[in-house]
Length: 219
Ligand code: AMP
Image 1 (cartoon, rainbow, N blue to C red):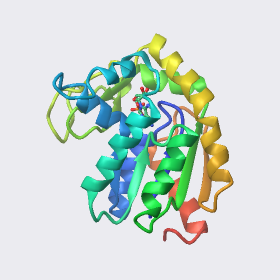
Image 2: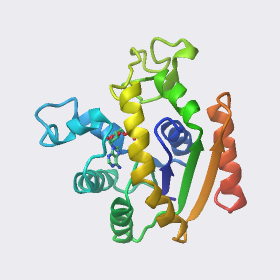
Image 3: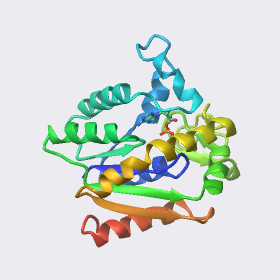
């Protein structure tokens, strides 16, 4: 099963992706994580090109598609892949279809996370991430280090208000077409609305499982 996670920054794609990957034994491919990894290495051929990430702007389709194609190849025989943060443009969605079709696979499910902007902003401003396992925390949980990896949690460079607002704008302008693209396709399109800031990740996960079960895709 290949799953695309759509949703603005802070909507819970990474967290839900991890929970789904564990539950269904799927690989998780986050373009944002791949780019942040490259940005740690000044010798990487894409290092200069990816500086744009720090400004909250989208990376070019050409670069994103090449990075994803390479990552899919490296995942080899994964049972399925969860795409987190990709595709973000219609050109990327078309490229993904091509990549998967060439392996006789397709996008089976799209999960579209809808979360009110004030809730997103609060989540992003308080977000702390484990640099090793990428698990996401919030300052209100009062963790200083990741309870599993025992390394200090970090704040993402693009989680500041100015860049966050640019990322929202990029999402609203560029990713709207991706929703239309998948609504017109034959994949299972699941809309999830999270209005309440106190809804826990586990509750959202259960909501996803029940939607998948209604379509015969989970038990
Ligand atoms: P994310 O971790 O998904 O919030 O992504 C962090 C940043 O990486 C974004 O703000 C973009 O600059 C860049 N990025 C991630 N995925 C994509 C994509 N599919 N297309 C273009 N840029 C991307």
